[in-house]
Length: 218
Image (cartoon, rainbow, N blue to C red; front, side):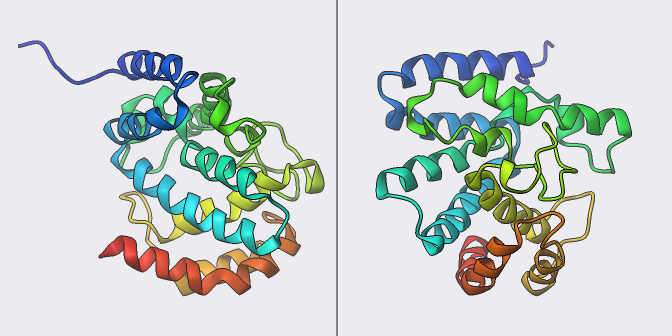
């Protein structure tokens, strides 16, 4: 019997159709896009929703965004890992550590994502959330090796949220950290992985993040 499992090509085709519609009604297609992500990788949808909530709290704390910008920022966070649609299931769902070659492929997901989502009006001005959320303060991140304030502020914010959720989420290939342990890792990453000023703001909103994490576990 022929397999009915959707391939990466199928997912990309579905996303392309949805994005074509979204240029007319962007809000109405967001949930459909998230559903496609969940079909591809059940972890990604819940992860993206938590990261978007964490990011919104931190963005509000620094008080540099209008309400309209916060909405675009939030939706861009929901889509920050959309490029994983272009990563093979074998790599995405691997239960052991990735090989060097597999990791190189995984590192393409930010650029794959931004190529998929360009001109999507709901995140206009916040494309860097998708492209640059794996950049690091010391310049050792990817895909562009940006450093310090050359990394857009929105990307610096989500990088903390993304790391916190990754550390506190259950994944088959690594140990899940407690919120307290993840907190310590974020603090230790100030000045190398993360913007040190934003880490200070993270300390203030941390308790709110823990509440979100606990709610998602209920």
